[in-house]
Image (cartoon, rainbow, N blue to C red; front, side):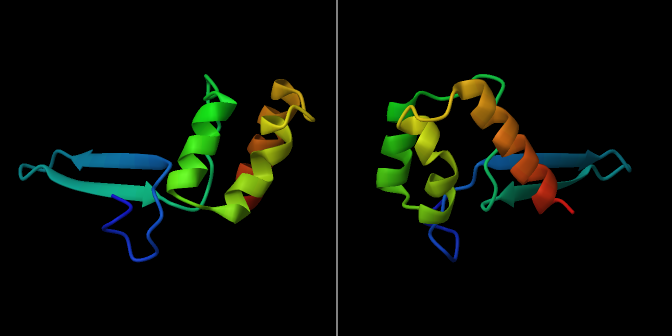
Length: 89
């Protein structure tokens, strides 16, 4: 997907909408710009691998302190939730 996108970025969240109107119309929306709030957080090594393959300094900056162990996991989750809320306003 990253190779197909204009900016070369991978998406983090996808929404699929299906409308049963007799023709079953459907739509995909991909969010390339916001980190999701995970129920189960990927390991720091997985994040580092992700950013190595798909560099996103602006997103990596949001989680680097957690990857480095300077911010506890729960504090980081609430910080990502606040960023997500601000982005949706």
